[in-house]
Image (cartoon, rainbow, N blue to C red):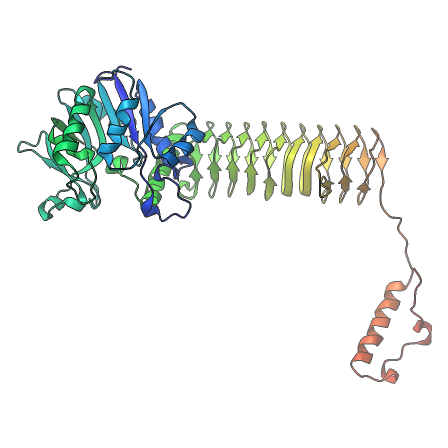
Length: 490
């Protein structure tokens, strides 16, 4: 790759542990999710825009396994064990670099808000010097290394870690981002000098990459806004980064023609795609690899995770996971659509409907109060309220097939595996335990029997029992002789 500063290799320092995250699961800091992606993946996406010849990620043994599971062998991995600081981490990466790049771009794995513009600014400033470092001025510099410039302010003479800073150095507002562009030919020699001359003289007993500026002519590149370069060391900083990332994501979608009503109430992950003229109403969570088509109305209060939504969909008060809906589909309110649900063009799923592993055909309707599981429903089918497919016997799942133009009556239980033929009707209240031929009417319910006067006699019998339990005499509550015998036979 040819950048403004020449060919480039990149090194991501990602071996650090998440000590200040106070986690019990031992997750590496760089793997904590931000807008749906591991923190380090945001960095990798930006670095790739510079088209480096090679990207090396410095990892601990635990982090390597997790990154391999996520990225495979897309990148080169270098193990740092034991972990003796950032200088030691870069030294661990050097044997893994197998390209002759002009510059090394070095980034910590916990700066997920870094932008392409900031990195290009850094690479441009690296020309004419041995190295360049991105700097910034956060509202509170605590925890960051202070940038000490030389007398004319053009070069960095020293970077002092916060824990090692003297009072006058702590007062400096300009701090180190940990992002460097280093002329590769000087790196190995400079790191050896850091190890030999600086030693472990700091309070943590580590080799600091910051000490490399003592041996290289390093240009400071002061960048704004400061949030682009902030490091993530605990969960409060992660929450702040989420706020910044959400503002960016929503602004990018809005720029591309998406409308947000009360955007501050909506959460959109980084991999979500939304078509032009779609409207996102308040209270929506859009996650994973969700793709929403054009001219859709999503929300209020919708949860979509890894969904594919066609054009002109209307989805309101609904929970969808791994759902595929084609064009002109209406969903909700209060629908729960689980993985494997596929809604064909112009289908409708109404209120209090749950579906999973089900395909609903073109123009078919499930208006309300229904469960369809493991079902294949044809086109122009109407499913009556209260219908369920009984797909599970406690051991195995079974499928139901409902062919085109079927009318399923209210409150049906369809005991799978069943096939209901094209154009058939099922009567309300039926339990369908046999296949239904095409164009047939299936009635599967008990025969109605009316017992005249039974309800009245039952009420009188209960009244006598109640008064007897309360100690009232029979003379006060005696019923007419014609009503004394209320006993019925089934």
